[in-house]
Image 1: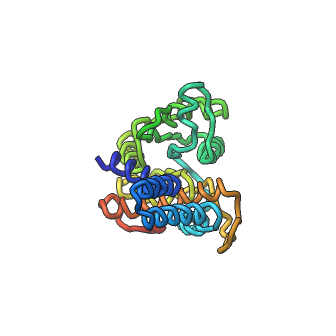
Image 2 (image 1 turned 60 degrees about the vertical axis):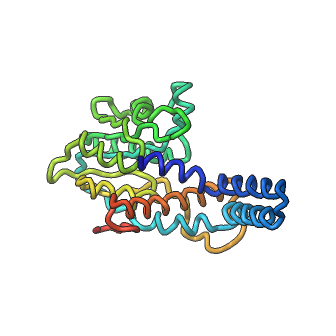
Image 3 (image 1 turned 120 degrees about the vertical axis):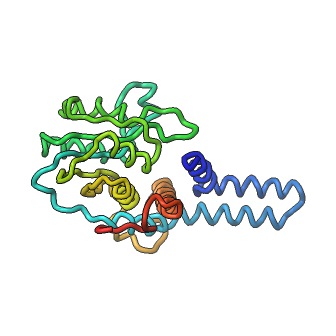
Length: 265
């Protein structure tokens, strides 16, 4: 139930969709002769889109998430690498049978680099199809094609293709891997996603070293207008709002212990 409610809520509340719904509500109000409601809906829709697309709001919201878990020095020995899904174009790969990467593809590229650096380490890819409406191939099903082409042999791979969200990533991966005391596992995911991912793996009893990748901000954007193109700014704002909502939702539901997890608990 949590999965479906979270997907429906996010479909409504994400900036672009919320602006569209407000415009539709405004148009309906205009047809009913409610000019004040029409004006209010139109102004709110404009403000949402303008803030999300034309300002540095998204970068300012995303940067604290990216800075929360700095990348540590690499350990001498790594027993395994866990990479969370979200790096592939699942809908395209399902049809074309390829390994097309999306803007989060750094996760898979970095995993291949780490796998070559630690040739004895197991590589766990955790990610099924997490979309509610869009059919697609899960990252764990696509990853062997790309990682194999990059030199990661199949007998090193452990594939978890049932999870639909980060909570299930942590729980299903722990169950599948059964990590032993004293083992060293790296957790690879986007830097903005690391606070929630690390907290969920800790809660599941799977000790990991966070290895953030896929940074979306420089940390030097500051307050301003037109710091990036509108489409990228809208995407960054959307990701930031989604991640902050996810953190608080997981905290309120008891799935993580802090609303803004930090290194060391």
